[in-house]
Length: 230
Image 1 (tube, rainbow, N blue to C red):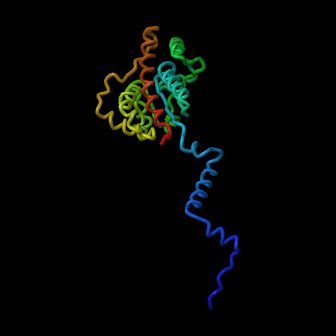
Image 2: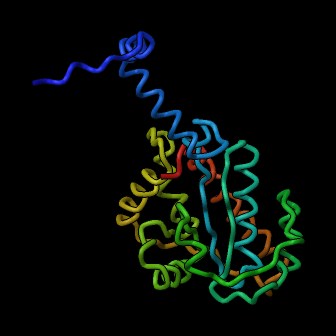
Image 3: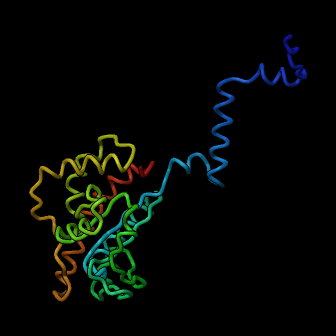
């Protein structure tokens, strides 16, 4: 003997009849964004891009490059986390005096900067790691081999990424992956930005100009793909 069909109220039958795949999808999306917390769907897509710049003592080239990158992203209204460190940095050392001078000439203030040693844990989640010399690049890779494809010298990335600016990449990770492929075809000569410490104002200004030129290219390319880090 079969059981009689369960009885549902008129309201329940009406709700079941009016439900659609679109309604189900909207409900699922609402639940998903509710779990994310107080952010909008646009916030979930527009993730913060992270770039870590590595120098030697983190008192000259790397903090200047990081500050210039941060300013470019801020001017574009693009969320980004930019920081720096040094492979031989002394904890808490201030930025070099002449570096602070030329930094002000480029519109950034390094007076509050304090050096910190490179820590693989601080860079492991960065979308991009930029060094100022090839030797530093190899030192970072030795400490963080999992990030090999994301570690470039500043000039290296600027050169290989420049032709990709108008390629329509929607995510920085896709552009960085393509840049990694393209750099295999380069010799790498000229990728180093020399240390100006102890060489006077002329050398510092030359180095700051080289850094600013590379930063302009890198920032311009990355800002176009800042809709999502991954």
